[in-house]
Image (cartoon, rainbow, N blue to C red; front, side):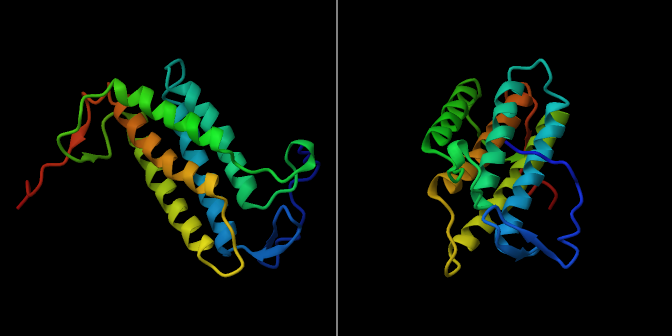
Length: 189
């Protein structure tokens, strides 16, 4: 259980932060950058949810927000999971996300062009969350490639699938694709 009695600790005033393992890292460290970027994704999803209250899309988005904290804890090398073990993302969470993608995608017409960010407010914010998620994934891959660093396979898979979910969800939020803004190659030449 998390207990926050005090919000500021002053321990980060020197430009470092503490990982869940207790190790201190610079605030620009790739590991910190990865879970910080996922925190941005989570905040963007929070904005989306302002536009999906009462919509069936809101339930999986709430689920994803919680899962994102699991991914962040995994990246933070947290030792505070259930039973005191390190909290990691599971293949079950990845499979759940894949099933949600499939459910939404079944309701959409096939694409005939690339989709531009826009349409409804929810869809536009979902596109923004998707691009942030892709950035987080790139950072995680770079982190994984660093000597002495690890990123769990399920965490990387989850973030990769999440960007796919956010894309499909944006189309769903655009009246199941009817309000998608399609790219028209060379239109402005």
